[in-house]
Image 1: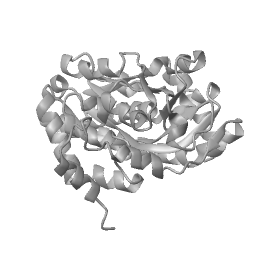
Image 2 (image 1 turned 30 degrees about the vertical axis):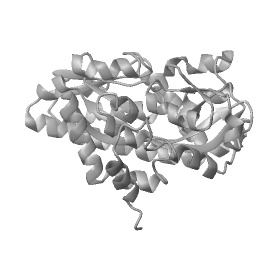
Image 3 (image 1 turned 45 degrees about the vertical axis):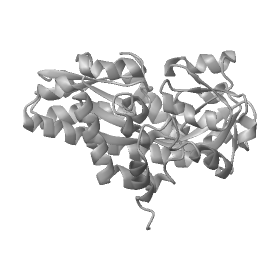
Length: 332
């Protein structure tokens, strides 16, 4: 599929989804679960979750369905995380660093240059170590974290080329409002500036910040390329989203429905991962066609600067956990 076809499909999906219309089967379910996230209705995190509503309704004979709320419509990232325990949302996509506010070790998977590449990340999400992370988070919160969906390699956008850490000195870099997102900018002497996701485009447009960092599909969906001249392929975080069911919701389900819901959310994460990987492979050329400068970057000095901080005072994991993660797949 070409990127133009991808964009057209996403646009058509967005037109339908923005009205928050539910598939008939999901809408008619006896109980409709609220799935909240901060991403656009055109993105796979939304479209794959919408498909999950039909799958869940079919698998439970219409006892359960899903309504998906995109683009921070039920609150910012911190809000929807809190909503899990309050029962105001039932399911969320969230970053590991936000989940790390409740259980520190799980944040390790969202830290900069923690993974060598996609294959290392993929091995981690299928590892015993990640299983232990899920259990630790679930025990600490009462929620049910189930799976990781690939979010993409995060790159830095700006209004100038970035080729070395020195180019980022004193740069006001927007980051999500979770402490560990500040590790990368601090390592390169930039100024991390937490701003809610829904407010980033305006902050870039008005010059409140000099740049931001996100994967290529997100840069496209949020249209950050309209207000930034350069995309610098720093790839500093191989990022992913946790699919989490709130404790009150999970506890209200019988065991068979818990298993079915877990299967559906796991399938949804696979849907997301496949589509994000496909988009990443095509988008650099698409951005160049739009007149954006897409700059190849030697990431070695960036990685070296960050790795000095991996087990410093910002770490929310211990050395043993770090060593186990780094050993995953290393023998290959």
